Amino acid sequence: MTVTELASYEDALDAYDPVMGLEVHVELGTRTKMFCGCATGLGADANSQTCPTCLGMPGSLPVVNATGVESAIRIGLALNCDIAEWCRFARKNYFYPDMPKNFQTSQYDEPIAFEGYLDVQLEDGEVFRVGIERAHMEEDTGKSTHIGGATGRIHGASHSLLDYNRAGIPLIEIVTKPIEGAGARAPEVAKAYVAELRELIRALGVSDARMEMGQLRCDVNLSLRPHGRAAFGTRSETKNVNSLRSVERAARFEIQRHAAVLDSGGTILQETRHFHEEDGSTTSGRIKEEAEDYRYFPEPDLVPVAPSREWVEELRAELPELPRLRRNRLREEWGISQHEMQSALNAGAVGLIVATIDAGAPADQARKWWLGELARRANEEGLELADLPITAEQVARLSELVAEGSLNDKLARQTIEGILAGEGTPDEVVEKRGLKVVSDEGALGTAVDEAIAGNAAIADKIRGGKTAAAGALVGAVMKATRGQADAGRVRELILERLAPSE
Image (spheres, rainbow, N blue to C red):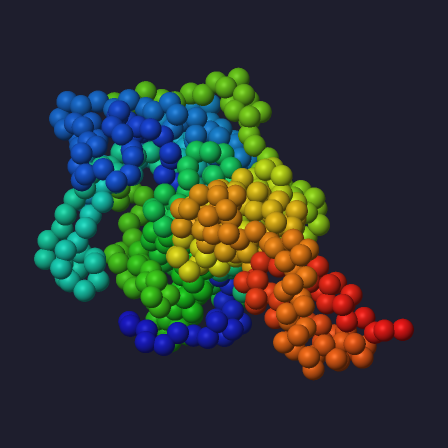
């Protein structure tokens, strides 16, 4: 049946418990593909990074990428998983044009990592534990571009273009256990889990995990069950959701859609669905296959993977501080609230703030510039903070110039503008634009005298004891000096000159 209206979110949660399963694909940052020596760099001409192996030519044989295996173990350890002493690859058989071999080399019942968990912190500080069923190694597919039609999808297209550069790039698929008990916060938990996982992957250094570039993609599985029932409902799977906000919106939409179908006496189809960013909706894709439909069988051309316990423990000892623990430590060091730390995390600024502090800036100043002026400019340009053409060292130097009185906040913002425009370092921009604060006492005194002479009525009020009126004269001096005067010193000079006579 077709549902034209959604149930209200509140009504859906009054009647049903949502159960989620999240499958996250992480594209590893290796130099070569998972089973051949082809390069993995972005931006190459279509089909220029291919070979007989990743194109599935007869007689070609795969070889496992050792760095890919190491990355998989690191991820598994960071997710508190057990690491298999022996595992192997399998062939996942299906036909689709972007899979040139007609099967995907993956892992089925013998993953490299299993039985783990990840603790995620919600915005109010509550910690929710998400169980990890498995993390397994596989290869990515090629990229299909559908030409013609209104949606960019295969339905309605006149023809399709295939680029196999991505085929064979190493992936780690991380599959959660059923996530129960989140209730109305289920969409928030989904978003927080993917966000925490992304930070973890970046901390491990195994991938840049850029969702907008497809380096981290999430499939959102969701079902509803009536309150008091033990059995799960039929699930839908919203495929390839590629932003944190979209993960949350997809889960919320599916909760409301499922409830509307069930309330009307309909039946949920086990199917894949497409997420639409423009309105947060999902639409039907295809009926979802079960595992047996893929006819898995062990990959005969690859030897099993058997990481030694010594190697595993060496990798465990090298794990970095986990992101959630690091954030809690930094929050205490910086003396800020959970909400403030969450804002820094949401802005992608935590690492930049740390780097700026390491370059010599006080913590409060580092946060001020990255979460204020720089966040505003990144938002205007539609960029990530880290993609702005300014370094942590330059922000630290800017903070130093403000602290020593060479710049005020207004001039510092103009300096940032020059840095982002490619005009050089903070010192070079200040010199080129003539932005340094006017601190010469003679020049300031002249500007103050002129402001007093031009605003006699205000000056009389100040002489009469109404010192609050000094702000108007400070503004006049700042205007005359193009904002380059030291406002504090200007105020002192005004009050000295207009002090009531005894």
